[in-house]
Length: 607
Image (tube, rainbow, N blue to C red; front, top):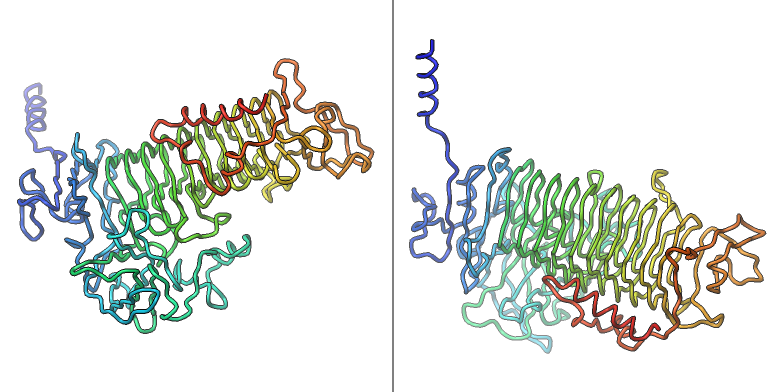
């Protein structure tokens, strides 16, 4: 019996076991090969085409993708050469779902250059149609069709790479997005979800839509797609150079995977796609657990740059620049969003920032729970800096910079959450807004020069009874120069709010102090406007009303006293609304520097 057991053990030990492979990819190596050539993927004979390398890989493999100083991108087809048909995604990654092995897709260790992975194709055979004072009008017959479809897909983004960085994207004129949303049509859409979104915002879903007024009216660096004739037109300020290519959005997804486990993406660049032709969503669209995006740059993707769902996921040390609609959309539990940089998102296409547009939005599948959003720098975006929308509970939002956005931080139908130690300044709306986010703690934040209230707790409770606007704590914050154009109002809160340890600063009013707005409390009309508490002494004393219940004293705590300081805002703070002071923004590792610089401005004037 003992000999038999030993034989079984030896037999198992000698059985072949599948080993994780290292697969190399390079689109510039002289030894690179493409299918149907066999044996591709070695160090000296890497795959030339990234899509073929991904298709050949298995869960647990290490996929090493070379970048170069010339930044030669990886396309669906080699060299970005157009074809009649194209797939839905360059990287089909659902199969990377091992519970025990980690799949990595990364640049080589120690490499200076990140590989650029693009969802566009390069078109060169343009015909000059005409010229006028607006520039040179070129056209091309458009045939690119996604496999499984019967008509060409509408191009949503066009780039001229000979222009300076940040100016390469041409402006879309006319066009449809999200399948059938056409602002020039009546009705604009038949989709129930889009109709519901449009009814809830002012200006429609796409305020940046530019109607088509004729080919002669096309301005420089604009494009128009004629859906009937299937012709793409571009108007350029200068003529195309010999053999110059124009990049046009081609792929719905650059990478797409669901049900994934243990996958790391590291030191990569994902940019450009044609996502909104089909629906709103991520150009990199992932769902699963233990997914890690580390030091990945997302740029200029149509619709969302990255959409990630699931638990125990990380997005860290990454950048999101000029994403078409939203930089990052995420949900799940026990996730980490840390040390990322968001800038310029939703500035080219200008979707409605009060609907679903800007640097971040955390929504869907019961929201983001028990997670951390920390040490991110979020600046100069057309949308809310950090937006938790519906069923986002028990999160910590700390040590972030949110500047020159619409709202700095917005919690909607969510809570309780902790908003702590953030630097929030120069935003075009409130510094922090809560709409139906009970028991949230707002502590030790620095809020300076936001156009409206420093902290605004919305008076209307959520339609979901579980999320009333109640029992919020606002403590130990610095709030300087808010709502300066009208009421000089640092906070707008309901009666259940607890406030203490705060430092207020702003221009003196006719009553000598800042104003405080107490929602759902009507004082004696002889005291002033309903809900408006005019003096610091009244705010800090119990308030009696013949019209509504008594309101307590606010900001009166012997252990953690609050203070009011009166000072007019310096011109540099007022100028933030028209000319953001970019020197205050630093990434990476710039949160502490920004905090020190902004606080120094407050300390200089608020004495």
